[in-house]
Amino acid sequence: MTEHVLTELDDGVLLVRLNRPEKKNALTPDMYAALADAIDRANRETGIRVVLFTGSHGVFTAGNDVSDFLDNPPAGSDSPVYRFINRMVTTDVPLMAAVDGFAVGIGTTMLLHFDQVLAARDATFSLPFINLALLPEAGSSQLLVEACGYQKAAELLMLGEPFSAQVALECGIVSRLANPEDLQAEALSLARKLAAKPGSALRATKRLMRRTREPLRDRVLAEGKLFAQQLQSDEAREALSAFLEKRTPDFSKFV
Image (cartoon, rainbow, N blue to C red):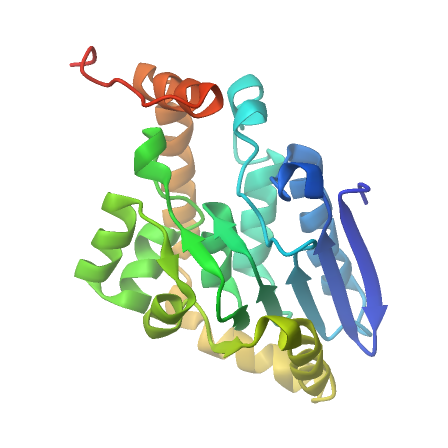
């Protein structure tokens, strides 16, 4: 595990904590690899009943490290980011999250794969792909429509504006809200309740509930291919460079 992803086993709950406060827990390839490794560990070890993801220092994650994305764009389905996404799609271990502060990009789309998501009442969510001239990922172009309905999903993905924890709750991205000071304790309490259930039955229940999502693998692969292509576009280079330079992007020169 990288120092930026910390793990701790607690009563059958594998707590996975993002810990890169100087970059607001923005994700790097090494961090994605560590997150995938955590799910692999849960798949192997029957003593792990639930995986609980959380942030640190009042932030869940700022999403992808934009500078790193420009310098090292993900290449192929075996890259760390797609390895993590595929582990989320295929695991039958219950996944949970405790979200406070803000969850940007993959910080929001990853939640669509989780079985329970608790969020602080003042948490903020964002799907800013369009503002960076990029596309939805992690199956979100399908899962968000299923969760929110087409028009609401279109609003969130096509405008790319931040939205509140209450909106996330109404959309089904979040399952429960908690007071910020109670979030971690409530999430761990719920995770322990799940971990106390019969493990084989818990995993089998998840497999049954996910049967309708079997084609999701195809969607994830399709998104990944188009995302990689778009990341190389002039529009995306302009948007990402403008983000790093703290200026407004200019797309008028692109036809």
